[in-house]
Amino acid sequence: MSPFWSATVRALQPYIPGEQPKLPNLVKLNTNENPYGPSPRVLEVIRGETADSLRLYPDPESNRLREAIAAFFGNIEPEQVFVGNGSDEVLAHAFLALLKHEQPILFPDITYSFYPVYCKLYEIAYRTVALDDTFALRIADYRQPNGGIIFPNPNAPTGRALPLADIEELLKANPASVVIVDEAYIDFGGASAVALVGLYPNLLVVQTFSKSRSLAGLRVGFAIGHHDLIDALQRVKNSFNSYPLDRLAIAGTTAAIEDREWFERTRQAVIRTRTALTQNLESLGFEVLPSAANFVFARHPKHDAEKSALALRQRGIIVRHFKAARIEQFLRITVGTDEQCAALVEALREILSA
Ligand SMILES: *Cc1c(COP(=O)(O)O)cnc(C)c1O
Figure 1 (cartoon, helix red, strand yellow):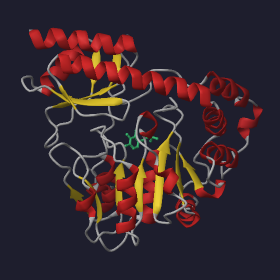
Figure 2 (cartoon, rainbow, N blue to C red):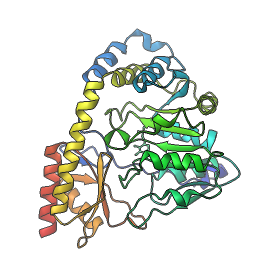
Figure 3 (cartoon, helix red, strand yellow):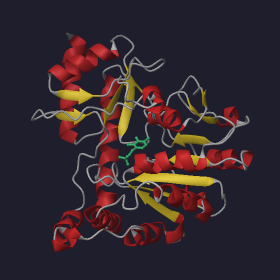
């Protein structure tokens, strides 16, 4: 703390990202990155963009990319798409643009831990709503006055997905609030609420290129919603940074969303591996929550999660452990390649029998 810090900065409680260790040969299953590389087309177009044109600013509206995203979904206009520097930035703008009102906003007690951080930054009041005993989100509990609602679907770090019918019920019950569905993991399981965007002007769906399209290092996320909501995001963006996406990011993500075959192949591989990993963990005695994401959330009735995470680390395998109420006995394990998951299961077998 320094006397030079503003009162705002003093009050912040910044998000702590999962570690990105530099050690070689690690089995890195801690930040939900995709184990497969991005589409080869992405690398090709990025190479093509590394030219003299880098001296020029990129398109401030990223129109090529917004058109490609609209075309991917089919029933969406480019004017209904907002893009940002990672979905974290898109979410940050959405908190300021759409969730800062008189009433507190609502989100689950166990969820993406960036949400309370944005609330602090923008001085937005919030109330958490407890997940039920099975770590499922109960729509009925969101029938209370609110300034907005946000949750990931599938939820993080539980991996549990909410059916589209429940989201629709929530939208109907809250016509005066913006409902933001953070679909960072939707391509690994759940049904996307993008299908509802045309019906509900209060719905904003946020997705990312970081997980299912294997571009966490390029930093691109997007939101889809009614033009009025997108307009609000544009106003914040153009009061903050006119060029959030650079030329490489625009070119790379446009190629990524156009390569449907690579997308299908790699996401199906992750889904297959998730099924095998779940069975293998269960055979070791773990309770594994039903996951629609590219990670599983698992606890062992007889073995302390933090100790197991440390023991895995000593064997060069990194998973995520949260020291938070209700979930401190869980490990969040990213679905890696078959080989990585086999190494994890073998290491756990040794640790549990020690
Ligand atoms: C990974 C993740 C994000 C952030 O993704 P970026 O696009 O890499 O910023 C947002 N929400 C949830 C729930 C996530 O897990």
